[in-house]
Length: 475
Image (cartoon, rainbow, N blue to C red):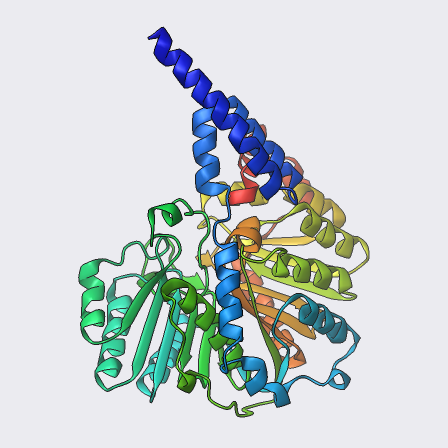
């Protein structure tokens, strides 16, 4: 027994010595996370090491970047096809111009004109529009989802895809292995039998990649014929139709796109598909774009493969740029210290800063972690609302009624640093006005947190919030 304990002690010591330099090299931009991981490894040699191997290492960056370069070296490059649709700086006001310049410097896509963009907040209409687009497909249907449930809605969409594949339409379906873990071989086999290409996003393709369960594809993308696209907060499942007894009514925001921005979203799918399968999309998936409206838009994609967080940079800059109003709607709110500071500073500058969050239907740990930030935000003058009429799931931000961001990222560390996300920046006054109006429509269904009442909450509540806040980097 003593010999075994001695061996375990030596192995634990060597494991600690091996992993500490890895922590220092991989977490150097996040000092708090660095200290937390080092303490976990030192105080819990085996368990802490296991947690770090599962949750702490980004294994995808180099591989994604190499495949990204391969795709962009082909003739399918979106900038070549949509070059004449690039945005003219003269059409922007000062706020839009600053955020446009920032976005173009930190991402590979450029803003385009000639887009038609519809905001969709009704789940039934959203799924009806997606179904109609699938029914109209002539050449290609590409789908990427974080969650696809094998329930009534998921089965109905599966059968639609099978019918189109049998008509000769090329269908590719990419799903996240963890988010869509309920998809069984039995459910997917009819799709494969019909000729649909089915693939899973990381991890799951090798034993090494299965360790990376912390890095998820949170994207929701549908692209039909390279001409119509959908993205936003809605996955595929009956709960989004309000048919889940626990969640009840589901409040979400989705986008329907036409125009050059569709090809930018197609490129995001192409990169993910290449990563998952090693295959490129056919040239027919990138038709010459047509102008379908007057909206200026820019598709932005981000993930742990990037050296810096695009969405964190953009959110921080947008909030700091605001002069009149910041309107944020998010289902999960576990912000980084810089984002908390940005919201507080905006409110202290006299900018009306409103935040709508999910209420009792959100996860216990996430909700308590979010509430741990309320004290300082309320003192600064930030208006905080918790939605009560069901599940609140939008991910939207508007600045000064002229610039918006709508997509899949929440206002939390997981979306900003761990997940693969996609969003659309909208340089359009009308759409920003609509989003602000949606916020105001939600207010009667929400409880506003009052500073005085909040300061008098029980000590036990404060302890729960502080405990959950310790796990903010992975929530």
